[in-house]
Length: 243
Image 1: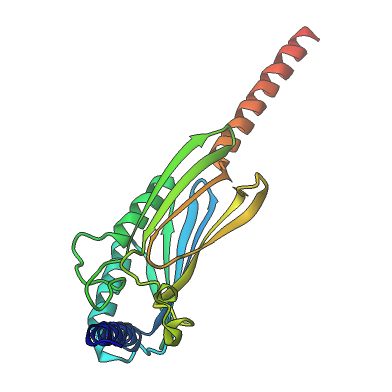
Image 2: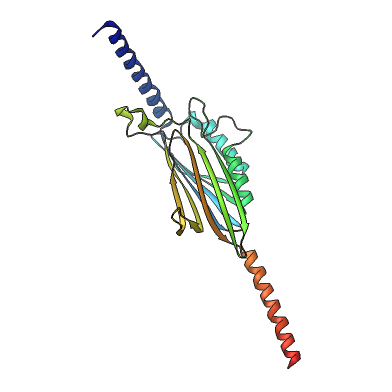
């Protein structure tokens, strides 16, 4: 082997060690984050966002290094009228209620893209932010509300460790998780109707999630029932007059 070839081999080795060190430090500093989001839309006037975060290998509740992040997370949750509960030292649950589609869209986007918080929970140690955006379109179909939702999770700042081809990191990921939509009628890509649809989050890219679903409109159903009773009343009154 020539000296130039040996130099190239050594440079590759140093790059490999450097990448191992960077990703190893990220895992040691933050642990692996298991993130699960369930968008529960029960009816026209009720729903909630339920998020569960679990750090494997990091006890964040008692770790002083996480104090500022947890304070900011509490502020972020309170700003959208949500509640936060620690299941254990590694796991917490965030519940954010909403009363209609417009409020779901506003609270989701305010939570993930706050204007007043700069170093939030979903930032990597190097500072890159993990952001998300939700857009919801609704149409009233006489007793049911049709909803079309588009959700984007920008995970481009989260390295996909399986793509590094480094044996020591093949079974590790900085972030793994799922997004679930739960509603009375969710249309799957196959056209079937079900009560829930789930997507796996993929690090290293923008995750685009799209779904159509329906929820009952009790206001519309009530208005239709009142109109029906009024028509029946007028019909009876007219029939009695004729009788």
